[in-house]
Every structure is written in structure tokens, then in C-alpha cells.
Length: 375
Image (tube, rainbow, N blue to C red):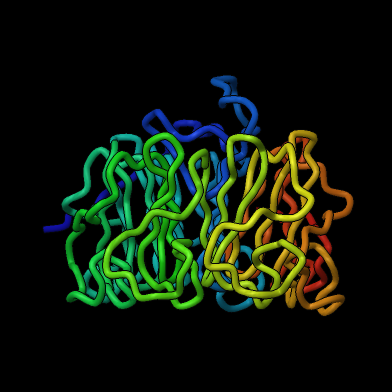
């Protein structure tokens, strides 16, 4: 049985590190507003500021403000609007799909609203997901969700493509443990596949392997989670539609999977079923992976992106070119944090301002130019 939850205005300030794996009670695949190089501060904060940004599979982009309000744009008109109409208190992480929103609360529970992942019914108010406790991270796409506890991953919803980790079983109305994913440190949930950093930096992936996005050197169907070949020092993993990327402990980045749009970043627009080093990147402290693109932030705040640029999501005007096979620097951005998803990218710049570029950005359209978003 699921219980509707009433939320209140008080919100704990949430932040954290992007480069180290999560060892504490909070971790997020969406981005928080504190610098990746330092932990969050307990100092007084601007309640109107953006605590984190999360992305749907294609067009939805939402921000959780420190006041507890959640504001979104897309799908639909490119205007920022209230998503729920009331603040969500004690929320520590936001997960977004085009039709569902979920929050992880500081007590380790998860509540969702929109289209219910388990039943498909409309759920207008935040409702606690039964069977989840001690959650440290949550992710959702339109027809399924996954959550990470201290060392396990549980998923629920549609199991097509093996998204539950056991291949084409029945849809799961309740969260079920993904087999073979032990010691999970960080979780990334994609449209048809997901990955987790486990143990001391290995990566395991499950779901569709049609484009080699599971990273085991093949495009074979895998009916259980598999280890990504040759990755042993990952600190963070991110996933798109057909590709996956990992930030390694030495500050380099490796990607694998579908690469027809330059998603691998090695200079060749071709698939790579095994991890391949992204060209020209070093000193990276944070990565962010979108539908068919990815971005990296260095210690000095520079941001580089590669992959699809048909909506300007790599920070270049759309179609000039429509994809980038190797990283390209985003001009005029010195970031303290980045986030990507769907066909968009956002960055916090010094002073806390958030700038976004990509599809239907309010005030900029698809220009590819980073613009301030008034959340």
C-alpha cells in the first residue's frame, strides 16, 4: 500500500562531491549547486537558489530550489513553471522523467508523482514508494525506476530490454533487487540500460546491449548485469540512450556503446563496445551525460562537450556541426558544477547563477548559447 505524503516548507541544504564515490547517506546522479571539489557548507543559503537540476529522457528539465519548490520546462512550451504547486520539504535528491517526478527524502524514503511507474495510473500528489528504505540515490525514466541503498540496487516498472536486470520478465509493481550488483557506490539510470559503480571502482551495467552500451566488448544480449571491461578506478558513471561514460580516478574519461553521433568522443563517429578514452581530456573532476552527448568539467572550471549537437546541447549553434566526434570547449563558461540530460546541458557558474543550452531553453530556444535561466 502506498501512502500519500504531505510535505512542508523546511528543506535541508543538500550538496556534495562529484568526483569521489558516495560513502555517505546522500548521492545524486543529478547535479547539486555546490562545487564538486568541496563538500557543501552549512552556511546560510539563498532560499531562491537552485539546489539541483534533473532531466527527463528527452525534453523535461526540472530544478529543485532550496525553498523546496520544483520548477520545470518541457515537454511542451519552453517556459519555466511550477511543477507541483507546493514546496517539498526535506527533499535531498530529485529524479525526473518526461511523465514522472521522484524525490529522495532525507529519511531515506522515496516519493513519486505524475504517472505511477508501477501501475501506469495518474498520481497527482507525492506518494511514498513501498519497499524502499535507506535509499541513497534514485533515478527514473518514463516506465521504470531504480534506487540505490547502502550496497544494493532495486528497480521497478517495465522490464523490457532487461531493465530489471533479468531480461524481459513481467513488469514489477514493487522494487526488486537487481541480481549481481553488490557493493553499489553510485547509480546511473538510462532509458534502456543502467550502470553502477561497485566496490573499488569497477562498473557493472544491465539492460539493452544493442549498441554495446554495457561495455563488455560485445553487442550480445545479456540477461544479467555484466562487468564493464577494463574499468577498475571509476569514480562516477553516466548513461545516455546508447552510450555510457565513466570518470576515472586519474581524471580521464572513458566512454563506450553507440558512437554514430560522436558519443564516444575519440574522434571517430563509430560504435565502441569496449571502453575507449575520450580524446584530449585530463584533469576532469565531473562528467554529465545526456541522451546522445556528454560533457566534462575540469578543475579550472572549463567545460567541454561531445556527441550530438542538433539542438546546440554541446554549446555550439545547432548544425554547425550537428555532432562533435571529440570534445569541444563551451565558450564563456567557467563552471562550478554541470548537469546534462535529454538534449540539454546546464552549468552553475561562479556566484551561483545557472546557465543552460540546448533544446528549447527559455529565452534562447535552440541557439546553443549558454543563457541564464530564471528558475
